[in-house]
Length: 278
Image 1 (tube, one colour):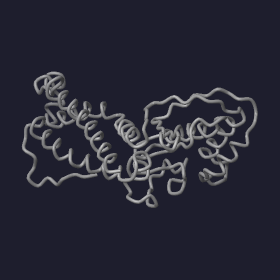
Image 2 (tube, one colour):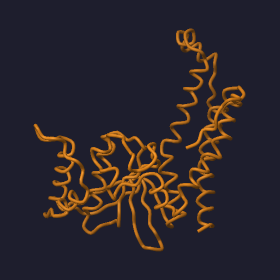
Image 3 (cartoon, helix red, strand yellow):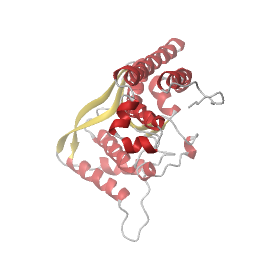
Image 4 (cartoon, one colour):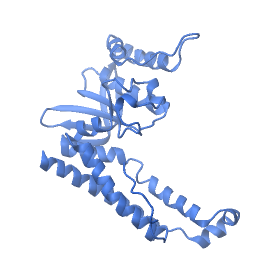
């Protein structure tokens, strides 16, 4: 286990370093913030707002794009090292009976639109999937593109994951639930299990998770198809993976924050700056 844990730690470190070094090269060499160009293009803004504000925005835009799929890429690393194989944006093709497809739409509509004068229905995974799987009819070919797909080569298990930000909006969560319901409805099943996964929990414990939007679609505290934080990473990479992830990010954060202050902003880090950890 120690060797596998170190492999995961090293792989996570390499991924983050590669992404951050690309960002630094971009903002320092390939596409730096040019004060004179900014003032020429936006003289009104420059007259009213310090250049440093727009310099920060310049960095943010060039940081967000390469990090847009960082959770999926980190999960792929953990899955490859922990299970044996993992892939992102993986296409799963299977057949679903037409009445199951209709019932999936029905279940989602009921969760989204309560009947007049009635309270909103609470999500109930076990009863929802039981009702859907009772649907008959001819089989229709369906393709589901999952964020991450992993195969446990030792246990011979296949898994699909919808990985979203810790505070996802309602529409994104609805799409993920539809995908997961379709994966469980395929006949024959193409995966052993599918999950709605959040990379970390800003509320601490799972029982304290309180962001309202995803709770329209999942019972975030109890649904077995929901994984949050350490549950997700340790399932994918094995026990200790989440702590390895935290340790790597925190160790690299101090280094890159100092570089950004000195090399990009051109100032020394504040003496009273507190170390930021996740």
